[in-house]
Image (cartoon, rainbow over all chains, first blue to last red; front, side, top):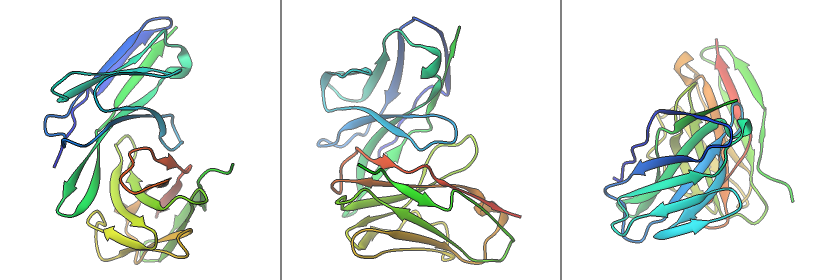
Length: 112
Length: 114
């Protein structure tokens, strides 16, 4: 099964760009990479998803190299409200069933 | 439109009792997922439904755990003879199609077994 690896925690300051990298060496050929954000006492919230190269939306950018064995979530000019846990998600097949694999998450602390 | 809702938001039960947790997915979403999250931990996959069938139950921790989905909508997760290690937040998510990584989560049910 695919596995993901992320840093356990990161610290940043308001206004800085934050980059969080996730490793997924065994990602399936046809699978996407998805990132979620989770605040305390809430369910995770979808941020961004991509297959290769670069994807950008109003919240973040996602960079995926050609070999797709890793991905980097980029948060521009973070604010205090970006303090949260960020999860990298890929999927894999276990037999005929799809199993979505969640990373352990990166706890981002944005300081004033 | 309405998002995913879960009830109850909090449940405190005595060890050995049965509990039922409910999930109302977004209307029209065919896929429904149950996860468990212990304090400070990541999400642990439990089960997912495609329509009313559950192709993958491999994440259920023991035979005390079961889940069903009726009418392609509401789902219930049942834990029988609860144990203290069952204490966690139980999260439900729905998705427009099976296999999509874009899931919409409910607020969760915090279960405490005393």
